[in-house]
Image (cartoon, rainbow, N blue to C red; front, side, top):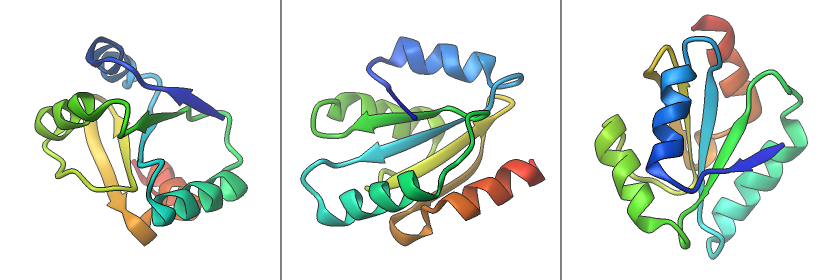
Amino acid sequence: MWYALRSSVELDELIQRSDDFPFILFKHSTRCPLSSMVKRRFESEWDSDKYPVYMLDLLANRSLSDHISSFLGVEHQSPQAILIRNKLVVWHGSHHEVDAHSISEQLSLS
């Protein structure tokens, strides 16, 4: 279900392909209990193989997280989900806003 996001080059490639392949970016702090709870809930609810979910481990990739915030214009939060389609951020949410239903709803709208 999860793909690890490890570089800005990989992020750029994903964004360029997002016209045909929208994707979800999940920013996760492995030390944060709330982030772990949101991640577990999302895992139990998400049932789509159609839209890949890329996880960014914030502790291991802080500079990439900073790049994402400035490049996409989305203030850093943790946990955070960002939906990218057509090279644009079409939805983002953090903390308790991150749930499979909300993201599925956005995918059907965008």
